Length: 193
Image (cartoon, rainbow, N blue to C red; front, top):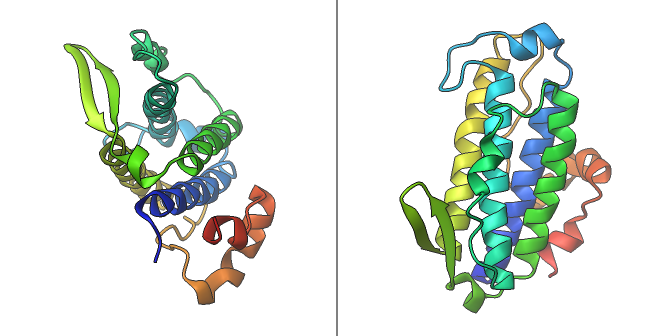
C-alpha cells in the first residue's frame, strides 16, 4: 500500500504526463488556431495554458518556500503579470515541463508527516494558511479542470485531442512507454520510491 506522500508523488508524475500530452498536441496547432477566440472560462487555448502555468508557479513557489521555512512571497501576484506571459505553445510547453519537474521534486521530498504541515499562501487580503496535502490536492484539481477546458477547445481545431483520462494502470504501461521515454520517466522511479 502506498503512503499518502507517495500517492501525491504519483499524482505529480501523472500531472506532468497529462500536461506533456496536452501541450504536445497543442504545439501542432498553427498560431492562429492557438490564439483564436473560443468558448470557455478563458477566451483561447493560449490564455488557458498561460493561466495553468502561472497558477502552477504561484502554488509551487508557496510549497517550495514552506519546505525551506521561507516566508510567503508577497510578490507572488507578479507571476500573473503579464496575464499571458508566453505567446507561443513551444514556450509554454518548455516552461510547463520545468514547473512540472519542480513539482515532482517537491513531492519526492515529502513524507506523510511533512504533508500535514502548513503552507502560507499570499492572498490579496493577507496570508492564507493551508495544509500541504490540501494545497497539493487543490493544485492537481485545478490542473485537471483547466486541462479539460483546453481539451474541449482543442476538439474544435484540426488537431485531435489526446487521451488524458489515464492514470497509471499496470497493464497499460506500453501505452505510455513512448511518452515516458520522451519525458525521461520510468515506471520504476514512480512506483518504487
